[in-house]
Image (tube, rainbow, N blue to C red):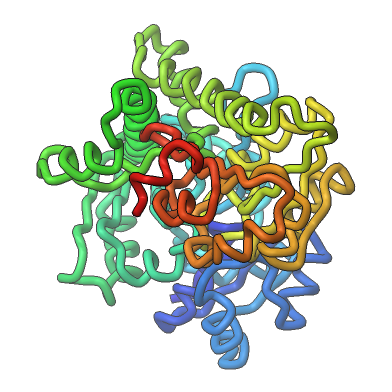
Length: 445
C-alpha cells in the first residue's frame, strides 16, 4: 500500500517506519526543511528505543522517503495519515486544531483517485466531520473517506507497541474505508483486537482512555500521601490493589505526577469539551488540579532537604518525562526544576537521553553533567525525577563520597532505602515514611 504521513514527530515517524517495515511504500511529509534534510541524510530526529535500526534498514531498502512537498506525498497515496500536533490553546486549553485544518486544506488539492484520510493525531470529537467539509470545499470532486485511527503508542516503547498492539481502534463510517484499514493491518490479523466503531466514538476513545489513566495516576499519588502520614507503604498497598483484576497493576506507580505530550493536554481538552457540552466531569478536573499541585509539592520536598544550607546545590537525575524517550514536553522533572530555580538554587542535572532536548528549553539556567556521578559532585541533595533503569544501579557509597551533604529525595522509589541508610543518607521516597540515617540506621542492619 502507498502511504503518505503528514508529520514526523513522536507519532508520525515511528508509524512511518513501522508501516515501511511491514512492506508498505511510505512517504513522510513535514514542513520543516531542516528536519527533512536530516532524515534524508539518514539522521534520525528523535529517540525511541529500537527506532534507529529500523529507520536505517527501511531507508536503505527504499521503503520510506521524506519530503516537504504535500503533492509528492499525497497524490499517489492509497492512505494519508495526519499525525501533526494538537497542542493546548494558550488560553482555553482546548486542542488547537490549526495544524490539522491546515494539513486537510492543503492535501485536498492533490487527491487523485479514491483515498482514505486517517487522523492519528488526538483530535476533538467531530474533527472527522470538519476534515470532510474542508476537503470537499477545497476539492469538490475528490473521492475520499475520513477515518479516525487513534494512536496508542507509548513514548519510549513506540516500536514495541507498533508491532505488538493490544488493540487497533478504527472509526470509519463506510465499508470501503474499513476495508482499506483492514488491509493495512492485515499482518496483525488474529494477533490483536481490532475494533470498528463510529468515527465520533473512536475520537472519544482516545481522550477517555488517557483521562482515565491520568485519574489513576492522580489517585495513587493521593494514596501515597496518605501512606506517608499513616506509616503504610505505598509499594505494598499498590501491589495489593493491583492483584485485583478489576483494578490491574499498571499506572499504580506513585511519583511526581503525570506529564508528556498526551496526558496533560488531553485531560485539559477533555475538560474543555465537557464544558462545551454542559457535562460535569469532576474527576478529570480533580486530576488536572492535583497534578499541578503535585509538582509543586515535589519541589518543596527537595527544598526542605536543603533548608538552612548556604548556597544549596541540587543534583537532579532525570529530565525526560519518562524513561525510554528524550521528550521533555510537560515533563514533571522540568516543571519541578522551574520551581526550584525560583528559589535561587544551583542545579546540576543528568539524563541518559534528554540532555539536548532539556538544554534547548533551559539553556544555561542549570549545569549539565556527563554522567550521574558528575552531577553529584558537591551536591547537598540528590533528587531522582525520571525512572531510568541505570539510576537503580547508583553506587551510594561512591555517591556519598562525592556529595557535600547526604540527602536523597527519590521521587520514583528507585533506590533501596536500607542501602541509603547504610551509606549515611537521609532518605525520602514516595508513599513511605522519610528516614534519617542517624535515627533509622539500626533498622537497616
